[in-house]
Image 1 (cartoon, rainbow, N blue to C red):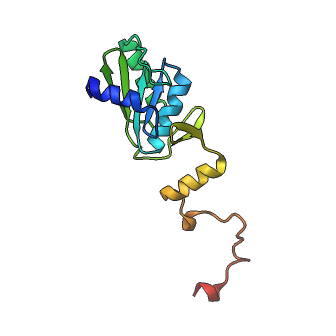
Image 2: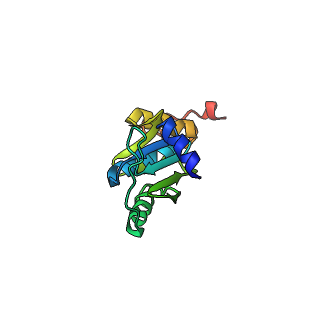
Image 3: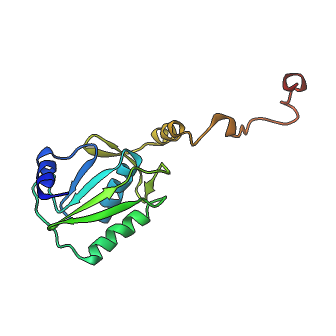
Length: 155
C-alpha cells in the first residue's frame, strides 16, 4: 500500500472492511479483530481518527507485539499482519477459516462500519449458517430408551 492508496481509504472512511483507531485500546482492538475475522476480513488503521484524519502513532516493537498478542488471545487465534505506513499502522485481518471467533468481551460481527456484539440467538444462527451445528448430530435429552424406541419404525 502506498501513500495515494492510504489517502483514498482515509477519504472514503470506515466501512465493512475498514476500521480507524486513534490509539491502542486492547479491549476495543480485540473486538474489532474478532468482528473482521467473523465477517469478510479487513484492515484496522491505528493512528487515524474516526473522521479519517491521520494523527499518527508512536510505532514501537512493543506496540506491534501487543497487537499480535491481542490477536493470539482471541479464541481461536486470528491471523493478522502488520504494516507500517509512515506513522500509521495497518493491521490486516484475514477472514477467519475457523469461525466463529471470540474475544474476552464475546462474539462480534462487522455490520457496515460498526462491530456489533452478537446475542445468544445470533450466535446460534451464525453457527447454523456455518454448518457447525448439524441437526442430526444434536442430542435429544428428552428421548428415553427403550420407552421411546419403536422397533417397527426403525426397521
